[in-house]
Image (cartoon, rainbow, N blue to C red; front, side):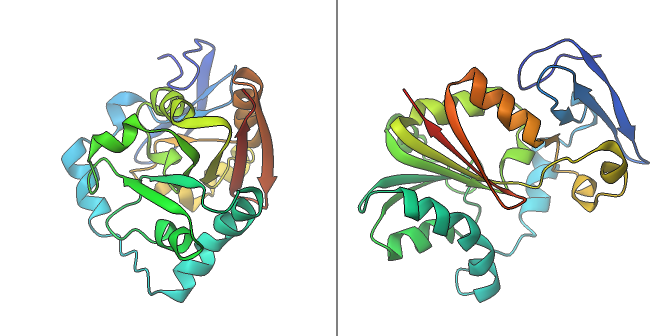
Amino acid sequence: MEACPLCTGLSVHHYHSDKKRDYLQCGSCQLVFVPRQQRLNASAEKAIYDLHINDPSDAGYRRFLSRLVSPLQERLSQGSKGLDFGCGPGPTLSLMFEEQGYDMSLYDLYYYSESSVLNNSYDFVTATEVIEHLYEPNLVWQQWLSLIKPLGWLGLMTKMVVDVDAFAKWHYKNDQTHVVFFSRATFEYLAQRDELALEFIGNDVILLRKLT
């Protein structure tokens, strides 16, 4: 068994298998993940991303994103500076924040890869439907924390693992670009490890505040 890509723990066990992939679980942080050798390469991954259509004028997509925008905005000072990490080819969440007077920067490995934005500090970082795609989740997690000012916020959207029976029927795992799957227990582990305040908003919105 390979080490956990999030906490580097070695207490990893088989969690589930389907026709395409195996899924392992870390006994320390509870992350469920796809073994490295079963992940797509970069070109195959991007080919799937290129099929995504994220239109800022789509009212339904805006309603979806508002489930993160609204609670995060309630916790931010007016004019706060944010980074939308993994914004994709049609940035929309950043536009929604800008419309409310926030100063936004963009970063995406494939579509907005100007790395200079990763040298700045931000009052908040958002990542909607991003964390489940990360091949090196611990490296990116540490990067996010380094970008956020003390008392700043990390706002995430991702579907979460409930249990192995639900996982077996879960459509979310069938997207081959989804390679790591978090649960409430995983976020609780990270919050304790990294001294973060943690809030769950509904079933798929996670807010974390940097306390130091």
